[in-house]
Image 1 (cartoon, one colour):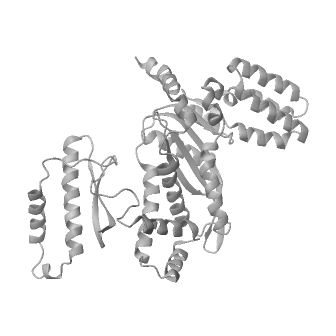
Image 2 (image 1 turned 90 degrees about the vertical axis):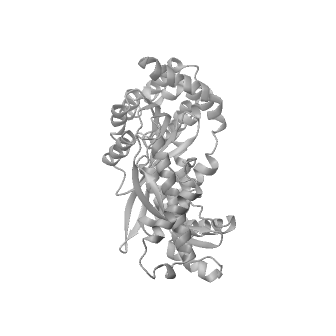
Image 3 (image 1 turned 90 degrees about the horizontal axis):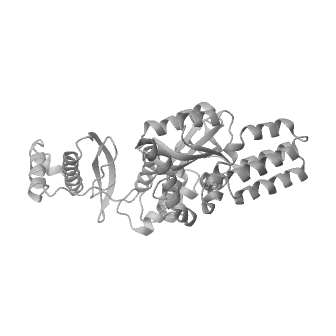
Length: 409
Protein backbone atom coordinates (compact mmCIF):
# COMPACT_ATOMS: atom_id res chain seq x y z
CA UNK A 1 0.00 0.00 0.00
CA UNK A 2 1.64 3.25 -1.11
CA UNK A 3 1.17 6.25 1.12
CA UNK A 4 1.20 9.90 0.19
CA UNK A 5 4.05 12.00 1.59
CA UNK A 6 3.05 14.50 4.27
CA UNK A 7 3.09 18.12 3.11
CA UNK A 8 5.36 18.77 6.11
CA UNK A 9 8.17 16.77 4.51
CA UNK A 10 10.08 19.49 2.68
CA UNK A 11 13.22 19.49 0.60
CA UNK A 12 15.05 21.43 3.31
CA UNK A 13 14.06 18.87 5.97
CA UNK A 14 15.59 16.02 3.99
CA UNK A 15 18.71 18.02 3.08
CA UNK A 16 19.17 18.91 6.75
CA UNK A 17 18.89 15.24 7.74
CA UNK A 18 21.34 14.29 5.01
CA UNK A 19 23.81 16.93 6.18
CA UNK A 20 23.46 15.76 9.79
CA UNK A 21 24.02 12.16 8.75
CA UNK A 22 27.12 13.00 6.69
CA UNK A 23 28.38 15.26 9.47
CA UNK A 24 28.52 12.25 11.80
CA UNK A 25 30.89 10.36 9.50
CA UNK A 26 34.49 9.91 10.61
CA UNK A 27 37.21 12.16 9.11
CA UNK A 28 38.26 10.95 5.67
CA UNK A 29 35.14 8.82 5.27
CA UNK A 30 33.47 11.35 2.98
CA UNK A 31 36.28 11.06 0.47
CA UNK A 32 35.56 7.37 0.09
CA UNK A 33 31.81 7.91 -0.32
CA UNK A 34 30.32 7.00 -3.70
CA UNK A 35 27.32 8.43 -5.53
CA UNK A 36 25.55 5.10 -4.95
CA UNK A 37 25.88 5.50 -1.18
CA UNK A 38 24.60 9.09 -1.20
CA UNK A 39 21.60 8.13 -3.37
CA UNK A 40 20.81 5.19 -1.11
CA UNK A 41 21.05 7.36 1.99
CA UNK A 42 18.81 10.03 0.43
CA UNK A 43 16.15 7.44 -0.46
CA UNK A 44 16.30 5.94 3.05
CA UNK A 45 15.94 9.33 4.73
CA UNK A 46 12.98 10.30 2.55
CA UNK A 47 11.27 6.99 3.30
CA UNK A 48 11.90 7.34 7.03
CA UNK A 49 10.42 10.86 7.01
CA UNK A 50 7.38 9.55 5.15
CA UNK A 51 6.92 6.79 7.73
CA UNK A 52 6.98 9.34 10.57
CA UNK A 53 4.27 11.32 8.80
CA UNK A 54 2.24 8.13 8.27
CA UNK A 55 2.50 7.12 11.95
CA UNK A 56 1.39 10.61 12.98
CA UNK A 57 -1.79 10.07 10.95
CA UNK A 58 -2.25 6.44 12.04
CA UNK A 59 -1.14 6.35 15.70
CA UNK A 60 -2.48 2.82 16.26
CA UNK A 61 0.24 1.48 13.95
CA UNK A 62 3.88 1.24 15.04
CA UNK A 63 7.27 1.31 13.34
CA UNK A 64 8.84 -2.10 12.74
CA UNK A 65 12.43 -1.51 11.65
CA UNK A 66 13.67 -1.62 8.07
CA UNK A 67 14.57 -4.20 5.47
CA UNK A 68 17.28 -3.94 2.78
CA UNK A 69 16.40 -3.70 -0.87
CA UNK A 70 18.33 -3.17 -4.11
CA UNK A 71 17.05 -0.63 -6.65
CA UNK A 72 18.18 0.81 -9.94
CA UNK A 73 17.95 4.61 -10.13
CA UNK A 74 18.44 5.49 -13.78
CA UNK A 75 21.37 3.21 -14.57
CA UNK A 76 22.83 3.30 -11.04
CA UNK A 77 22.23 0.32 -8.74
CA UNK A 78 21.82 1.35 -5.08
CA UNK A 79 21.22 -0.39 -1.76
CA UNK A 80 18.52 1.16 0.43
CA UNK A 81 16.86 0.57 3.80
CA UNK A 82 13.06 0.48 3.48
CA UNK A 83 11.13 1.33 6.68
CA UNK A 84 8.04 -0.72 7.52
CA UNK A 85 5.27 -0.86 10.13
CA UNK A 86 3.78 -3.70 12.13
CA UNK A 87 0.55 -3.86 10.14
CA UNK A 88 2.31 -3.73 6.77
CA UNK A 89 -0.01 -0.92 5.62
CA UNK A 90 2.83 1.54 5.05
CA UNK A 91 4.75 1.54 1.80
CA UNK A 92 7.06 4.45 0.79
CA UNK A 93 5.66 6.26 -2.22
CA UNK A 94 9.16 6.36 -3.76
CA UNK A 95 9.42 2.59 -3.70
CA UNK A 96 8.71 0.83 -7.02
CA UNK A 97 6.00 -1.83 -7.07
CA UNK A 98 6.76 -5.37 -5.91
CA UNK A 99 9.48 -7.01 -8.03
CA UNK A 100 10.10 -3.72 -9.88
CA UNK A 101 13.60 -2.40 -9.31
CA UNK A 102 13.94 0.13 -12.08
CA UNK A 103 14.75 -2.54 -14.68
CA UNK A 104 13.31 -2.09 -18.13
CA UNK A 105 10.24 -4.14 -18.96
CA UNK A 106 12.35 -6.35 -21.23
CA UNK A 107 14.93 -7.00 -18.50
CA UNK A 108 12.26 -7.74 -15.92
CA UNK A 109 10.53 -10.19 -18.28
CA UNK A 110 13.86 -11.87 -19.03
CA UNK A 111 14.73 -12.40 -15.36
CA UNK A 112 11.26 -13.72 -14.55
CA UNK A 113 11.33 -16.03 -17.55
CA UNK A 114 14.70 -17.45 -16.57
CA UNK A 115 13.71 -18.04 -12.94
CA UNK A 116 10.43 -19.74 -13.87
CA UNK A 117 11.82 -21.91 -16.67
CA UNK A 118 15.12 -23.03 -15.10
CA UNK A 119 15.35 -25.73 -12.47
CA UNK A 120 17.22 -23.52 -10.00
CA UNK A 121 18.74 -20.08 -9.55
CA UNK A 122 22.14 -21.56 -10.40
CA UNK A 123 20.78 -22.89 -13.69
CA UNK A 124 19.31 -19.46 -14.45
CA UNK A 125 22.73 -17.88 -13.81
CA UNK A 126 24.37 -20.32 -16.21
CA UNK A 127 21.80 -19.46 -18.88
CA UNK A 128 22.44 -15.76 -18.27
CA UNK A 129 26.20 -16.23 -18.75
CA UNK A 130 25.75 -18.28 -21.91
CA UNK A 131 23.53 -15.61 -23.47
CA UNK A 132 26.10 -12.91 -22.71
CA UNK A 133 23.40 -10.36 -21.87
CA UNK A 134 24.10 -7.09 -20.00
CA UNK A 135 22.25 -8.23 -16.87
CA UNK A 136 24.23 -9.15 -13.77
CA UNK A 137 23.84 -12.34 -11.79
CA UNK A 138 23.38 -10.13 -8.73
CA UNK A 139 20.24 -8.67 -10.26
CA UNK A 140 18.96 -12.19 -10.88
CA UNK A 141 19.66 -13.14 -7.26
CA UNK A 142 17.89 -9.98 -6.08
CA UNK A 143 14.72 -10.76 -8.03
CA UNK A 144 14.78 -14.37 -6.75
CA UNK A 145 15.23 -13.22 -3.13
CA UNK A 146 12.36 -10.77 -3.48
CA UNK A 147 10.01 -13.42 -4.82
CA UNK A 148 10.70 -15.55 -1.76
CA UNK A 149 10.34 -12.57 0.60
CA UNK A 150 7.06 -11.48 -0.96
CA UNK A 151 5.68 -15.03 -0.62
CA UNK A 152 6.61 -15.03 3.07
CA UNK A 153 4.89 -11.66 3.51
CA UNK A 154 1.80 -12.96 1.69
CA UNK A 155 1.62 -15.85 4.16
CA UNK A 156 1.85 -13.61 7.24
CA UNK A 157 0.39 -10.20 6.33
CA UNK A 158 -2.89 -8.96 7.88
CA UNK A 159 -5.97 -9.82 5.82
CA UNK A 160 -9.48 -8.40 5.50
CA UNK A 161 -11.76 -9.24 8.40
CA UNK A 162 -14.67 -9.90 6.00
CA UNK A 163 -14.50 -12.25 3.01
CA UNK A 164 -17.16 -13.79 0.82
CA UNK A 165 -15.47 -17.14 0.12
CA UNK A 166 -12.41 -19.16 1.12
CA UNK A 167 -11.18 -21.80 -1.35
CA UNK A 168 -8.98 -24.40 0.37
CA UNK A 169 -6.92 -27.22 -1.14
CA UNK A 170 -3.51 -28.90 -0.95
CA UNK A 171 -0.96 -29.90 -3.59
CA UNK A 172 1.55 -32.75 -3.23
CA UNK A 173 5.06 -32.16 -4.61
CA UNK A 174 8.56 -33.53 -4.05
CA UNK A 175 11.76 -31.64 -3.18
CA UNK A 176 15.37 -32.74 -3.43
CA UNK A 177 17.22 -32.46 -0.11
CA UNK A 178 20.74 -33.86 0.46
CA UNK A 179 20.48 -36.17 -2.55
CA UNK A 180 17.14 -37.51 -1.31
CA UNK A 181 13.65 -36.82 -2.59
CA UNK A 182 11.28 -35.71 0.17
CA UNK A 183 7.49 -35.30 0.03
CA UNK A 184 6.06 -31.81 0.58
CA UNK A 185 2.52 -30.45 0.62
CA UNK A 186 1.62 -26.93 -0.49
CA UNK A 187 -1.32 -25.65 1.58
CA UNK A 188 -3.22 -23.11 -0.53
CA UNK A 189 -6.01 -20.75 0.56
CA UNK A 190 -7.58 -18.27 -1.88
CA UNK A 191 -9.93 -15.56 -0.60
CA UNK A 192 -12.73 -13.89 -2.55
CA UNK A 193 -13.17 -10.36 -1.18
CA UNK A 194 -16.35 -8.35 -0.99
CA UNK A 195 -15.09 -6.40 -3.99
CA UNK A 196 -15.15 -9.62 -6.05
CA UNK A 197 -11.36 -9.91 -6.37
CA UNK A 198 -9.35 -13.01 -5.52
CA UNK A 199 -6.25 -12.95 -3.35
CA UNK A 200 -3.79 -15.62 -2.22
CA UNK A 201 -4.05 -15.73 1.57
CA UNK A 202 -1.75 -18.70 2.07
CA UNK A 203 0.59 -20.68 -0.16
CA UNK A 204 2.65 -22.64 2.33
CA UNK A 205 5.02 -25.50 1.44
CA UNK A 206 5.41 -27.89 4.38
CA UNK A 207 7.42 -31.13 4.71
CA UNK A 208 5.44 -34.36 4.58
CA UNK A 209 2.13 -35.41 3.13
CA UNK A 210 -1.10 -33.51 3.68
CA UNK A 211 -2.07 -33.59 7.34
CA UNK A 212 -4.95 -32.41 9.49
CA UNK A 213 -2.60 -30.78 12.02
CA UNK A 214 -1.05 -28.58 9.33
CA UNK A 215 -4.50 -27.59 8.07
CA UNK A 216 -5.47 -26.58 11.62
CA UNK A 217 -2.40 -24.30 11.77
CA UNK A 218 -3.15 -22.76 8.37
CA UNK A 219 -6.81 -22.04 9.13
CA UNK A 220 -6.13 -20.75 12.63
CA UNK A 221 -3.47 -18.42 11.24
CA UNK A 222 -6.16 -16.77 9.09
CA UNK A 223 -8.03 -15.83 12.25
CA UNK A 224 -4.84 -14.60 13.90
CA UNK A 225 -4.19 -12.39 10.87
CA UNK A 226 -7.58 -10.70 11.15
CA UNK A 227 -10.23 -12.80 9.41
CA UNK A 228 -13.51 -12.77 11.34
CA UNK A 229 -16.48 -13.34 9.02
CA UNK A 230 -16.74 -15.45 5.90
CA UNK A 231 -19.85 -16.46 3.97
CA UNK A 232 -18.62 -19.79 2.56
CA UNK A 233 -15.63 -22.15 2.73
CA UNK A 234 -15.05 -24.49 -0.23
CA UNK A 235 -12.80 -27.50 0.39
CA UNK A 236 -12.38 -31.19 -0.37
CA UNK A 237 -13.42 -33.89 2.09
CA UNK A 238 -9.95 -34.44 3.57
CA UNK A 239 -10.24 -36.71 6.58
CA UNK A 240 -11.18 -34.75 9.71
CA UNK A 241 -11.08 -31.33 8.05
CA UNK A 242 -14.85 -30.73 7.89
CA UNK A 243 -15.47 -30.51 11.69
CA UNK A 244 -12.37 -28.31 12.07
CA UNK A 245 -13.65 -25.84 9.47
CA UNK A 246 -17.16 -25.83 10.95
CA UNK A 247 -15.69 -25.17 14.40
CA UNK A 248 -13.48 -22.28 13.26
CA UNK A 249 -16.11 -20.69 11.01
CA UNK A 250 -19.44 -21.62 12.63
CA UNK A 251 -21.56 -19.17 10.61
CA UNK A 252 -20.05 -20.07 7.23
CA UNK A 253 -21.51 -22.53 4.75
CA UNK A 254 -18.96 -25.30 4.18
CA UNK A 255 -19.10 -26.69 0.64
CA UNK A 256 -17.41 -30.03 -0.13
CA UNK A 257 -15.97 -30.16 -3.63
CA UNK A 258 -18.25 -31.86 -6.16
CA UNK A 259 -15.32 -32.82 -8.41
CA UNK A 260 -13.59 -34.66 -5.56
CA UNK A 261 -16.92 -36.39 -4.85
CA UNK A 262 -17.11 -37.61 -8.46
CA UNK A 263 -13.55 -38.95 -8.25
CA UNK A 264 -14.39 -40.82 -5.04
CA UNK A 265 -17.47 -42.31 -6.70
CA UNK A 266 -15.28 -43.93 -9.37
CA UNK A 267 -13.41 -45.81 -6.63
CA UNK A 268 -16.55 -47.09 -4.93
CA UNK A 269 -18.96 -47.68 -7.82
CA UNK A 270 -18.86 -49.72 -11.01
CA UNK A 271 -17.91 -47.87 -14.19
CA UNK A 272 -21.49 -47.60 -15.48
CA UNK A 273 -22.96 -46.62 -12.12
CA UNK A 274 -20.21 -44.02 -11.54
CA UNK A 275 -21.04 -42.43 -14.91
CA UNK A 276 -24.72 -42.20 -13.95
CA UNK A 277 -23.75 -40.80 -10.54
CA UNK A 278 -21.63 -38.05 -12.15
CA UNK A 279 -24.43 -37.11 -14.55
CA UNK A 280 -26.98 -36.78 -11.75
CA UNK A 281 -24.62 -34.81 -9.49
CA UNK A 282 -23.95 -32.33 -12.28
CA UNK A 283 -27.69 -31.90 -12.78
CA UNK A 284 -28.00 -30.67 -9.19
CA UNK A 285 -26.33 -27.38 -10.22
CA UNK A 286 -29.54 -26.39 -11.98
CA UNK A 287 -31.89 -27.36 -9.15
CA UNK A 288 -34.54 -24.74 -8.39
CA UNK A 289 -33.72 -24.55 -4.68
CA UNK A 290 -32.04 -26.47 -1.84
CA UNK A 291 -35.17 -28.47 -1.05
CA UNK A 292 -35.41 -29.73 -4.63
CA UNK A 293 -31.68 -30.50 -4.73
CA UNK A 294 -31.88 -32.38 -1.43
CA UNK A 295 -34.79 -34.47 -2.72
CA UNK A 296 -32.86 -35.39 -5.90
CA UNK A 297 -29.75 -36.18 -3.85
CA UNK A 298 -31.71 -38.51 -1.54
CA UNK A 299 -33.29 -40.26 -4.54
CA UNK A 300 -29.82 -40.87 -5.98
CA UNK A 301 -28.59 -42.31 -2.67
CA UNK A 302 -31.64 -44.61 -2.47
CA UNK A 303 -30.95 -45.85 -5.99
CA UNK A 304 -27.29 -46.69 -5.25
CA UNK A 305 -27.75 -47.95 -1.70
CA UNK A 306 -27.25 -51.60 -2.58
CA UNK A 307 -23.98 -51.16 -4.48
CA UNK A 308 -21.85 -49.19 -1.99
CA UNK A 309 -23.48 -49.12 1.42
CA UNK A 310 -20.68 -47.40 3.37
CA UNK A 311 -19.99 -44.82 0.65
CA UNK A 312 -23.67 -43.88 0.37
CA UNK A 313 -24.02 -43.66 4.15
CA UNK A 314 -21.21 -41.06 4.22
CA UNK A 315 -22.91 -39.10 1.46
CA UNK A 316 -26.18 -38.97 3.38
CA UNK A 317 -24.41 -37.58 6.47
CA UNK A 318 -22.69 -34.84 4.48
CA UNK A 319 -25.53 -34.05 2.07
CA UNK A 320 -25.98 -30.44 3.20
CA UNK A 321 -22.27 -29.76 2.73
CA UNK A 322 -22.36 -31.11 -0.83
CA UNK A 323 -25.39 -28.95 -1.63
CA UNK A 324 -24.48 -25.68 0.15
CA UNK A 325 -23.75 -24.00 -3.21
CA UNK A 326 -27.39 -24.38 -4.34
CA UNK A 327 -28.55 -21.47 -2.13
CA UNK A 328 -26.28 -19.08 -4.06
CA UNK A 329 -26.94 -17.20 -7.36
CA UNK A 330 -27.09 -19.35 -10.50
CA UNK A 331 -24.21 -17.55 -12.23
CA UNK A 332 -21.72 -18.49 -9.53
CA UNK A 333 -22.91 -21.96 -8.51
CA UNK A 334 -20.38 -23.70 -10.71
CA UNK A 335 -17.50 -21.76 -9.14
CA UNK A 336 -18.71 -22.39 -5.58
CA UNK A 337 -19.32 -26.12 -6.01
CA UNK A 338 -15.64 -27.04 -6.53
CA UNK A 339 -12.11 -26.13 -5.44
CA UNK A 340 -11.23 -25.29 -9.06
CA UNK A 341 -10.13 -21.79 -8.02
CA UNK A 342 -7.20 -23.37 -6.16
CA UNK A 343 -6.72 -25.91 -8.96
CA UNK A 344 -5.63 -22.99 -11.17
CA UNK A 345 -2.55 -22.66 -8.95
CA UNK A 346 -2.14 -26.42 -8.60
CA UNK A 347 -2.11 -26.93 -12.37
CA UNK A 348 0.56 -24.28 -12.83
CA UNK A 349 2.63 -25.88 -10.06
CA UNK A 350 2.29 -29.20 -11.87
CA UNK A 351 3.57 -27.67 -15.12
CA UNK A 352 6.57 -26.20 -13.31
CA UNK A 353 7.22 -29.53 -11.57
CA UNK A 354 7.28 -31.40 -14.88
CA UNK A 355 9.58 -28.79 -16.45
CA UNK A 356 11.87 -29.10 -13.41
CA UNK A 357 12.37 -32.82 -13.97
CA UNK A 358 9.59 -34.13 -11.72
CA UNK A 359 10.71 -32.48 -8.48
CA UNK A 360 12.00 -29.15 -7.15
CA UNK A 361 15.70 -28.62 -6.49
CA UNK A 362 15.15 -27.07 -3.05
CA UNK A 363 12.53 -25.50 -0.81
CA UNK A 364 13.88 -22.05 -1.75
CA UNK A 365 13.43 -22.85 -5.46
CA UNK A 366 9.84 -23.92 -4.83
CA UNK A 367 9.12 -20.76 -2.85
CA UNK A 368 10.45 -18.41 -5.52
CA UNK A 369 8.37 -20.15 -8.17
CA UNK A 370 5.29 -19.96 -5.95
CA UNK A 371 6.01 -16.28 -5.33
CA UNK A 372 6.20 -15.57 -9.07
CA UNK A 373 3.10 -17.65 -9.77
CA UNK A 374 0.85 -16.02 -7.15
CA UNK A 375 2.08 -12.52 -7.95
CA UNK A 376 1.40 -13.10 -11.65
CA UNK A 377 -2.15 -14.30 -10.99
CA UNK A 378 -3.07 -11.40 -8.70
CA UNK A 379 -1.61 -8.75 -10.98
CA UNK A 380 -2.91 -10.16 -14.25
CA UNK A 381 -5.67 -12.75 -14.24
CA UNK A 382 -7.19 -11.71 -10.91
CA UNK A 383 -6.85 -7.93 -11.25
CA UNK A 384 -10.60 -7.67 -11.91
CA UNK A 385 -13.52 -9.80 -10.72
CA UNK A 386 -14.44 -12.74 -12.94
CA UNK A 387 -17.55 -12.19 -15.08
CA UNK A 388 -19.64 -14.71 -13.10
CA UNK A 389 -18.58 -13.15 -9.79
CA UNK A 390 -19.28 -9.60 -11.02
CA UNK A 391 -22.79 -10.66 -12.05
CA UNK A 392 -23.54 -12.13 -8.64
CA UNK A 393 -21.52 -9.71 -6.46
CA UNK A 394 -24.45 -7.56 -5.34
CA UNK A 395 -26.44 -10.63 -4.28
CA UNK A 396 -23.44 -12.12 -2.47
CA UNK A 397 -22.94 -8.94 -0.46
CA UNK A 398 -26.62 -8.81 0.41
CA UNK A 399 -26.38 -12.41 1.66
CA UNK A 400 -23.32 -11.44 3.71
CA UNK A 401 -25.14 -8.49 5.30
CA UNK A 402 -28.24 -10.55 6.04
CA UNK A 403 -26.19 -13.24 7.78
CA UNK A 404 -23.79 -11.08 9.78
CA UNK A 405 -24.68 -7.42 9.96
CA UNK A 406 -28.40 -7.94 10.62
CA UNK A 407 -27.56 -10.14 13.62
CA UNK A 408 -25.24 -7.53 15.12
CA UNK A 409 -27.61 -4.55 14.75
